Image 1 (cartoon, helix red, strand yellow):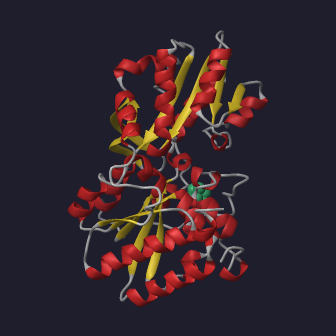
Image 2 (image 1 turned 120 degrees about the vertical axis):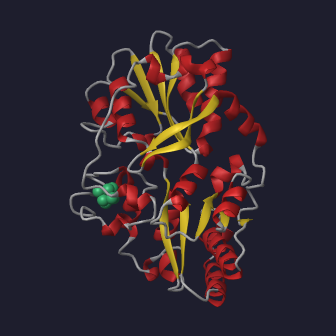
Image 3 (image 1 turned 135 degrees about the horizontal axis):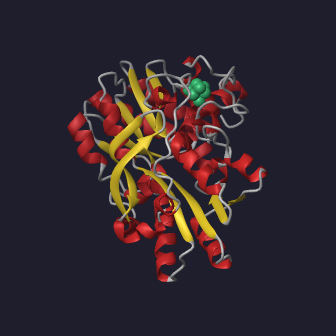
Length: 369
Ligand code: SF4
């Protein structure tokens, strides 16, 4: 398949890794932002193929992982109510709240439906005018355009039985939080290609200048990732803290400006709690007052629900690159994909799930490389 097979070419991947080996002269710690990149790295054994000088740590870019526990509890409270059709992407159904998950609410009779788009949820609202239809609007910048389009359409079509439970987060404030920490070890970032397809990379340029750190926009296939690493290592070795684009088939500096325009029409910046990390100022998007009628938190009066994380879970440290999943005492024993304590074990993009699924594989086991 075009744009896929060539980026899984083992010969090209190994040739790029050889270039990294020839370029690197000292240890560097890099963070891949996105959980999709983490999975590709661990699944393909890329971290084991890299020269010893390069350490990869795993970033906070997994939307399911950073959705706070109390928001899961809010979703459960709304989905349990009679007359509600609660809609969500499938991966949120297994994420445990304090007492239950959406699957168990469905087993108890809750009308919970998996959809592939908020526009599908809006259609369900049109078809069920006597029900309240709620969409679980989680994610980074990537999923925001579809979510705001559903609000704009609901507003235009005067569909008043549709609302969204919003937990949108943004990458740049999370990068700044990591770089501001006195414990920070990250010396270069692989930015998430799909986020940058929407937002461009103009927001990263002042961050690279302020913190004197290279950032490379990077895709998700094995060749994308090693190319991103090579560009970042070249920047580090030459002392150039600049933003580079290793995902030019998808990303431009300015990104999708039409998408940014509709996002800014519906969403405004707000403080947001990240699971395991806490509140990061101005790191989220919330509905602007003009669209507050579509805010499920207000409609169902669940703003005051609070929740406590498991004290055993160190996912916040994992998501900031300060610990690896297998350094968690609960990893693989008390916490497994079948009995997850934290969201990084539940989500397909979570670093803990990636380590659990692939960590014992060797490069020789790898089907792709
Ligand atoms: S292994 Fe489980 S408990 Fe440990 S950090 Fe990961 S999700 Fe949390």
